Length: 186
Length: 165
Image 1 (cartoon, rainbow over the protein chains, first blue to last red):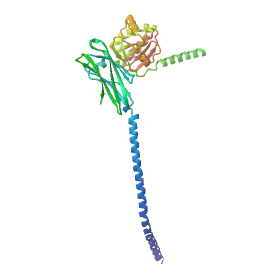
Image 2 (image 1 turned 180 degrees about the horizontal axis):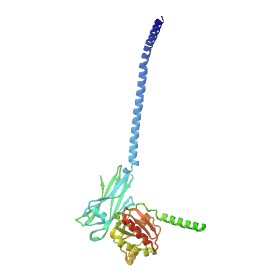
Image 3 (image 1 turned 135 degrees about the vertical axis):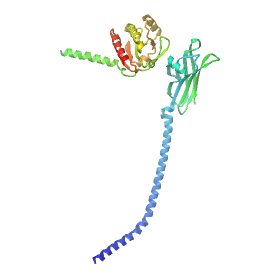
Image 4 (image 1 turned 60 degrees about the vertical axis):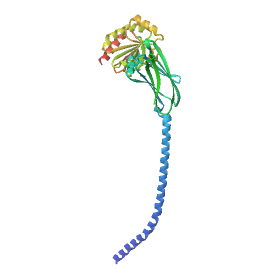
């Protein structure tokens, strides 16, 4: 008897569980749709956030390039010599926008290195973007060991990115005189 | 007894303070410079790396400098061939006066002209003469301010010790 009662209880419980199942199944599509919507919304949020981050990153990069990154405002000035038969280099003085920024005395060894193909970075500056004037004054011994002092001027425009300027001393064989040329490296 | 101790302490502290004041550059890398010399050539300190270098700041109006220079010249001629160099840095505004004094004293070491006083400022020269001794590695090892008879023995000992390193 007791056994029968137990079977009935188990059967009843099973029925009750079976009855409750369809009710649960009918609620699942709504929850799924809701969570899918939520997920889509979240995805959109993430995408817009990503876009904002990218925009911010681009703005920061441009700002860094224009203002913060020192290499970008850098201008380097190099001295080179070719042949040097008509000129013995003593010193180079540089003025940028009327202000003296470098005055370098060359020893015999240093001048010798330049003659052997060396290039000397005489000055490095951080300049704002825009137009600038460079005046280079070269002193030394010219033809017939005479005191020689020559200037060369370059008006250059500083854009974004590092700039390199070469002060080149060459011999002008026809005139038997040295020549001083300022070139911008591309 | 107490007063004697106090005095000894005071003297010691004055000496300690003066030696500290004069050794601000000691142990530091010697600031590099290039100047025009009495021979007409430009000279740069860093080109003497590997040698023991004495830099002597002097002026024509300085009596002890006149006293010291012939003694320094002796040191220079004696140790030059074993890696010792002496650079005399004259701080006069007019280098012709310095040239006249070099010729008068007959010194053979190179004299450089620092009319603009840039190098003197670099070496914090606030007395005359000032003698700086730089080791083979290019570091300032000794700084002497002023000159009194007997200093040349100190220079000799220090230069010899550095040459042996």
